[in-house]
Length: 213
Image (cartoon, rainbow, N blue to C red; front, side, top):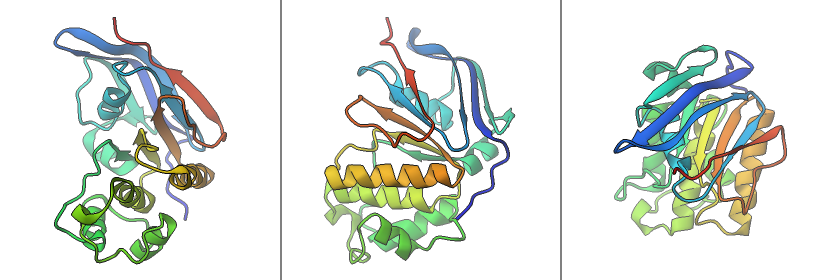
């Protein structure tokens, strides 16, 4: 289930900063993430963890700094091919079924040739829920469906914002297994966390964000 990786260094960030209403949220930041590595982004509420991931995903524009993917400027098309983003919101269509949601999302973002939608549902524990509407799912099941989409993504770089939220202990272990497998396959992950849980210790480093003054 290998993915194409253009460089061992998947992401490089130099002097990255972001402000809101002229108040600094984070930065300047300098860091890199290589294939096979997980970077844990920790910090208090308001320290900019979610904002950082949204900037890296191209959903927000940084005030300063540079972002490179595989050694090249992070242009929109390169971001779209290289990055899969798991945010706080599940990003599902409430009146579509589990199967319809995954077909729709794979149509938008692509799908790994070596993975089927059915196998992804089995990985996240949602086999048998194919015809259930997204609005009928619990918060934990919606998170699992979002994780299935992440598992299907051909993107080598996962941006995971509080992936353990709304999951029980079994779900937490599921996230850890997924991250471990993704890293073993040559991918990389940025994972925001309050510090209660951590991704598997496979080339894991820590990026601590201080609360903005």
